[in-house]
Length: 292
Image: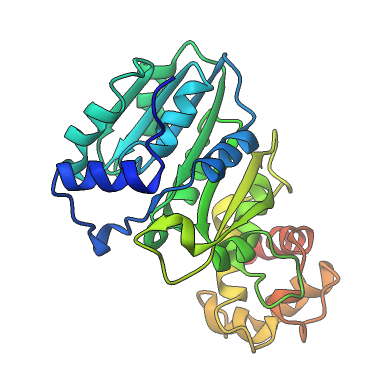
């Protein structure tokens, strides 16, 4: 068994050997606690027939744990300076492949077909760079990739927003978008002390299990998501207020908005944060014909 990468001493030695300095702009915080990494991998429930897709492998601390417990790992790394380090640290694991690309610009589906085509069980497992967490998660879900789910470390406040329920201060368009595609749960909270450098915020690991079908069925998905964004545009305002101000020609079509709210059995005086995903779906279907 090879020496774990994720120990404070080994991490320091690797960084010193390559003269590596952290780039704030890339949100680099490396994990230096093997137990935390093992627990993250536990939550992904991988088998010898699974593959893992990782984003931002850093010096390979999580990659190594994934490689030991799955058939293959494909990792996307944006920082060229880390490529020679990963080549060394992952040398003992021939079942790993590092792709030097920004995952937000990458053809992830194409990579899956090419690298993991014969593997049926796919999980995304990552310690995500905090400044791009939401766009990365939404890209992975919107592209309808053939994955079972996502287990990722992110800022605790974003995890709270993702797993939030209607009527709470954290509930918003992100909560609903993620709930539409997945079932979300926070599986662990992680202290700042297990990272180098230490971030200014607490972290959490969430598990998103992809639904076979979206949580609700709507006539037009694009309009449904637009409606949700508009409903949360100004949280203190009523639904009616946000819709008349946010929808194109909303002011001229106030009667149509009121009529759709009535048909959907939603009080126009409610705020967006009190609506469940089912209520948004009903409202979207009644409103869509007037704004299509």
